Image (cartoon, rainbow, N blue to C red; front, top):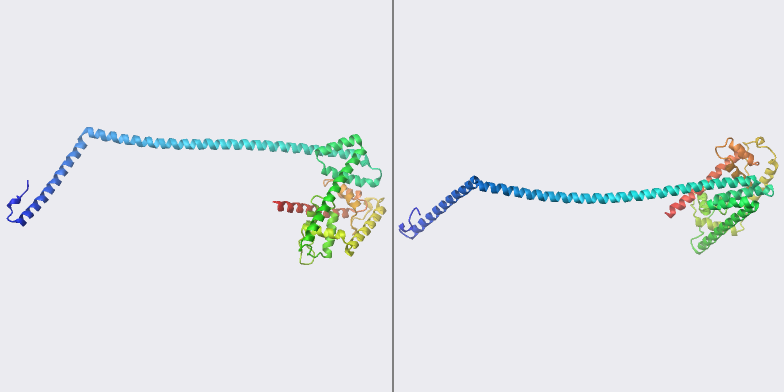
Length: 385
């Protein structure tokens, strides 16, 4: 009940004020009652064993659901990892299998190559022994150098099958088989020469159609180096014009500035021009080479009966090497490898018209030529890549 009755007011304003006070008292009492009820409920929840047991069961149920969810996530992650491991293992096994197959193929190929190399080495030795036993199938002494040169070229060019066939041919046919081999090598050389001539004609035609072609001036020293390079790398040389171009670029360091780097197109065009020209420079070079060859042949004929020990090794001749001397030197270097005792004395004995020191200097010059060839091949390989 209200603390003061509303009707006890004297007027309207007093009754409004009484109503306001009663309303505030009712709100306060309601709040107190609700607090008391909440305390009672909380006490009942705290003291009632059924409520306590329900709370415990609910908490355990939530924990079990949470653990089940975590376990399911863990199992799923482990399953994904297991699948990934199995995939990686399959990839690894396949890769190892492929690598093993590649290694087996490489080993088989290497063994095959090694066996082929052994067969080639054996066949080469057998062919050399047959030719040596038959004095290289010569009719006179003048054919010895030519036969030896052709034989070495054939042994260098031929593969396993060709060498075996050549061995059978020499064993059954003898000199006839050797002459057939020489004819085949000559055909190969002729084919190479024709190929080089065709390349020269093609390059010269392209240069004649190019308004900028042929504008580079060749000095007398450049032409002399070119003629020397062409003589050092005859027709039939592997990658001949690359080697000639590289030789020219390596040997023009000492020429007056500005130094010009030649390319294969310029070299081929200049060679074609020299072949078709009748300039005094070319005639002079040809005449000088012919005179030097005559002098060297005369000197060789005078010294052919003298012993190598009677020559003065320190007296180095300024005359160029003739083709016969070059062939004898190359054959002597193949006959007497670097491990041979007193190698240069034996080489000088083979090249009767040259001293030991001259042979050594010539060998150094040949080493420069080989270096030029390798550099040309390396430059061509690098350009193709």
